[in-house]
Length: 66
Image (cartoon, rainbow, N blue to C red; front, side):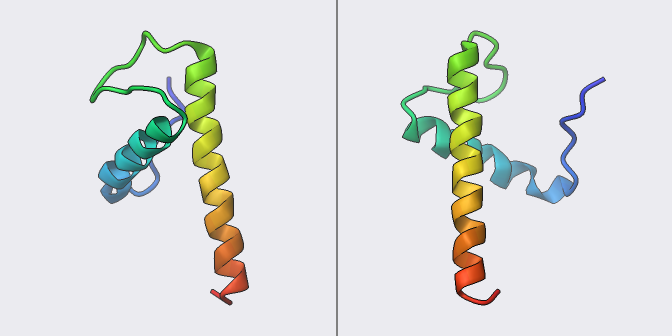
């Protein structure tokens, strides 16, 4: 059983786009759908970039008083 459930189903498309952007930024080519051929390093790079961008947004929101 997967623990990677989207809490807000309406956000699925935006999360997919976010993942594609993060992959592009770290130089990993993703295709729509299953990407099982990715190495652990590539998958980790994408996830790490996503977390980095989320933290940056949170910090910017804090600065802006949101």
